[in-house]
Amino acid sequence: MNAQLVISLRSIEYLGEKRICAESVFNPELIAIMKTVPGATWSSSMNCWHYPDTRDTINSLFDAFRGKAWLDMDALKKSRLTGGGTKDIKTPAQKSVLPALSSEASDKVGRFSDWLRSKRYSESTVKIYTDSICTFLRYFSTKDTSAICNNDVIDFNNHYILANKYSTSFQNQVVNAIKLFYLTVENRNLDIDLIHRPKREHKLPNVLSKEEVALILKSPVNIKHSTMLSLIYACGLRRSELINLKPGDVDSKRGLLIILQAKGKRDRVVPISEKVIVMLRDYYTRYKPIQWLFEGQNKGEQYSEESLAMVLKAACKKAGIAKPVSLHWLRHSYATHLLESGTDLRFIQELLGHKSSKTTEIYTHVSTKSLQKIKSPFDDLF
Image (cartoon, rainbow, N blue to C red; front, side):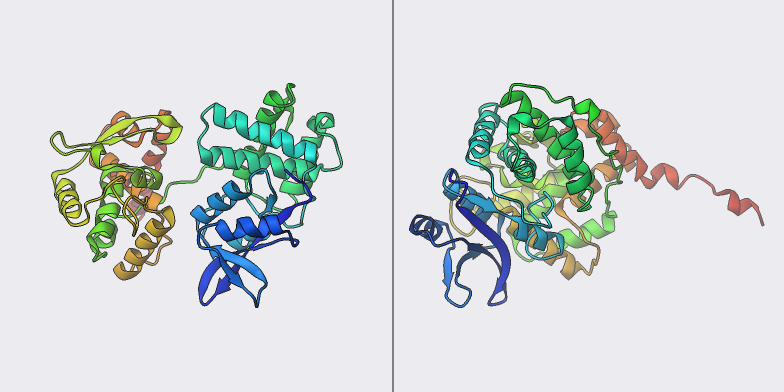
């Protein structure tokens, strides 16, 4: 990778639509690549190429410029934190432009990325860890990677992460990436136990009432949209699990949904109600999907996570629900409603695909079944 070639991405609005603008110094090779990225449009007024503001675009840009240029996403990430564009990128924005990676550091990051893929880490994990270590090494651009020590990591935490008020989850991601990078690429072990990790935040899951869920699921007019949202709630799916389903994953005779290689590369099966099977049959008859159970506008094209989120947003608006509902709220609601109906926590853990029972136990804190039986001492005062 040429450390001098940097492409800056930022969020813009073009004809009322959110777009991603790519800017760089003039370079015929880079311009030729920019033209090939799906959705590429040239704006003479802004003097840049711009693309649909979607996760697929980000992936395409990374694939197109891998090994050819560094993608500087500082401005793009910042716009997402302040409410602009879609919210697909979960790493925080950098408030000041960091120097580009050196050639040596770029090569090492490339080797780190290759190692992660060879170990079959998911692409999202590869991207998160690669972005994290790039940010860290760019912060110490004047220092050789082999000379970085524990004190440098503490300095990075204090003067970059904490100073910019970044999240605890990002801080843990960076520390994990640093540990793995130095263990696999530098062949030495930084003593992570000496590095200050933030206390884990314990947030309760957001849960909708059954009445609110019913309103949301009844709102879409399009049968594809209503079937997708219904399946997420009825089976407690993550959004990635839904869009990765294939027609053969539905076992209607046994009333089961087969979820392959979900989070943590774990397979599981969950029961499907007869009502959902009827919906799926009606949907399948009308749309006749080929490769994916839910496809985009073009046959064989996987439905995008962005479009799915927009379906939910439109359903909530039509249902008159003003809460900032996300697709994961439907999964949380599924688990909580199962618990409130008397389903054993161990079964819920299996249905959700949780590795640890501690992850599932959080739903006991939002279940109202037991809480409503508690009588407040205030009632006995008067």
